[in-house]
Length: 204
Image (tube, rainbow, N blue to C red):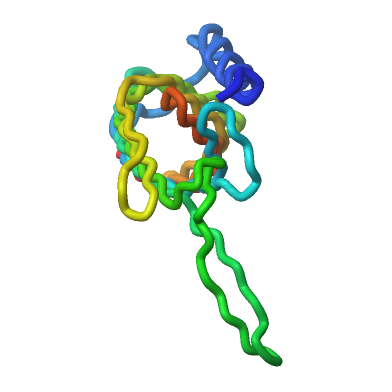
């Protein structure tokens, strides 16, 4: 992932974490230490800087947060992703269509399948906007493992540790249920993903 794609996220994270450094005297509510959540994301994928509008991924991220302070928490998460199928549809006759998947040239490598998983450890900071609304930023590391396949055969495999970045907006109801919308970037060495996400959480 190029530094230009990471830069907006880094700015957002810096804003959130810098604000927290000066917010120690703000009024606080009862601290709920635990929360679980899940979000679904969709976006783009690059391999060694490849860039195509047709290359997309869908992923599911589940996580646990432990609140250290009112606005800082530690996060442990598991992300699982796969390439998004591309469909080609042709009209056979009036209102009669034939649709098939066409994933034969992902990443410009003539591959048809991408799978990956990430074990994430991150720090999360929040910037309150009102009683229930806040902005959030996450920065951390993740252990990644991915396969790039062609016709059921793995042609590229890699696993290592990379950077994890996320930023967005969240809304928390008094009952503990929350929702969030955000942007996430995962650096997996030669393979990078960047997704828009929507999710739900429960805090207690």
